[in-house]
Length: 193
Image (cartoon, rainbow, N blue to C red):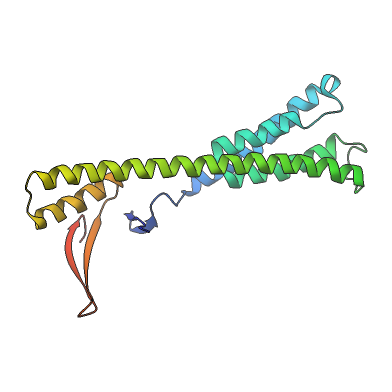
């Protein structure tokens, strides 16, 4: 298994694994806002949708999963379950711990978790497809250079350059491991100081 490490702004990240602070707030804001919109719409449409408060809240979970990811969709699930139980399930303005409420809330949470899980699986599959496409493009480019008769040291320099470009990294380094001396030697680098 190969992992790509990217140096960005002096920090080292595993490729594709970080979110900046504003993005995290934006993602979780989507979850809270989608539940708030579902609440407002359900309240406005209550005379026509009673006694079924959950459809718009499930839509809020779906939107959170689609646009913000797994964590925010789980927050939307928990928040929606509380809002539905507190405002729409009798007795309103309170949370009743009864078997009926537990079953109703349990079914809602199970469906919302299924939605979140399906979207997380979709995101993983899309990321894997992008990774494979990037890998294939890099291999094809290096293959063309190798077939053109490039010398091995020039090919290694190209490989590091292609890797940095394909990963959109500021720098990349190729180390050669010597088992005899149990040491590493720098073979090629791009953007490395």
